[in-house]
Amino acid sequence: MKLFSLCADEKHFYELSTLIREFFPLCKVVPERCDDVPGISLSGPDLPDVHGALWDEEGKEILSLSVTDPYEDFQGERWKNLAKICIFRLFVQGWGKKPLPWGILTGVRPSKIAYAYLEQGKAPYEIVEILKEHYLLREDKAALTAKVAFSERRLMASQDGKDVSIYVGIPFCPTRCSYCSFISSDARSFKKYSEDYLKALIREIRAGGEMLKGRNIRSFYMGGGTPTTLSAGQLELLLTECEKAFHLSSLLEVTVEAGRPDTITSEKLQVLKNAKVGRISINPQTMVQKTLDLIGRHHTTEQVEEAFDLARKIGGFTINMDLILGLQDEGMEEVRHTMEKVKELRPDNLTVHTLAVKRSSRMNELGDGARMLTEDPEKMADQIDEMILLSAKTASELGLYPYYMYRQKNMAGNFENVGYSLPGKEGLYNIEIMEERQSILAFGAGGVSKIYTPEKNLIERVPNMKGAPEYIARIDEMIRRKEEGLKIHA
Image 1 (tube, one colour):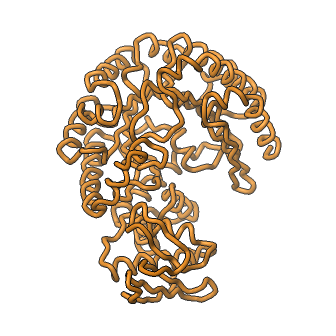
Image 2 (cartoon, one colour):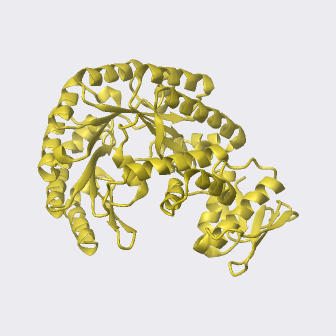
Image 3 (cartoon, one colour):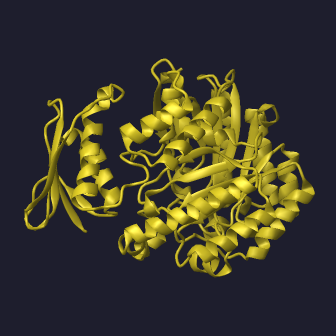
């Protein structure tokens, strides 16, 4: 389906149309009734109930129904959530669509709802029932959400709203993966911009250190791109500057994404260890060589295994592994193979992503993503569902439990990304960025600082320029933006 009509309160049009696209991936939702286009109309927001009607391409009504709210929990979100329930039931009952595993939820952070209920004194089992009944979540997704929220609350217990975490972005990769939408430069651009980029980044870091004097810094995360695209000497220079500005050795957690195994060397790992980096990621996404070649990752599965061995020989690292379910041409056989390799490598953390087709990714530009999502969405959802169950089983067999989770737009099968961890090996930064209960200052191209005001429970986003050349040229502006944002919310 390419076009769908939604006649509803314009205030909530975006969220309601997002739910429609969960049922019909990538369709365009228009705010008026059109000829030869199926659609839904919903009653106005001033009514105690919400009435909805569904019609087909010929304008013939398929089903109409009303939804009454027996719950007080919706409060200010009452009409919007009733409208979403109405849309959900019209599609399931009227068109026979398969219920969505995440019910009416379309947001990035479903665990925030469960977290709020925990803070109200609700028990996890009560929250599961609320999520099933009020938000129409499938039971396993409701249970996952409650588990993650419980873990997040426990791990965030020592946090103060005035605390700060640090993100440093390195926008360079050896190659660009087909699914990636990040603004990152390949090896050729790295040679052209890396020295000037590091000079600008160090300027911003030094200025940031001055801005944060007297503030408690909890965690540090260097991501990208692929930070280990930098040489050992460049890494050492950058981490030395970060130690001077942010006192890394006193933080609760220091993470560097090693990411691509073809960028990992013994010398670079030793630099990380000397800088007190305790967490690294080695991210194959899949352990099927044919898929790695297809998605543009120019490394081998053997290099993944070698990188794990090297990191363990040097010692002292908590190792995360990232995987993506739903990659092109991968079915259950390929995912089973990857999971067997995961068992052999035994990472301390396992982050399992469901493929999300990003607008600026090469996959989307070539049209492959649209075909994958729209060709047979229910068949894809069933297959991804089976893959997710296998990944959860694998994590459990390794003694890993789910501790953070988030969702994205245009995800295959409308599922989720889950981070699993051995007890005591959790990544605090991952939880902090999900919960948005403290400030995170981001340095480098593409970074978005989140400045938190605990008294108002508000986040202001302060973005840096996305591309390395623009960031280098406008570094003074990036520094001023942070200074102004921190002053306003001091």
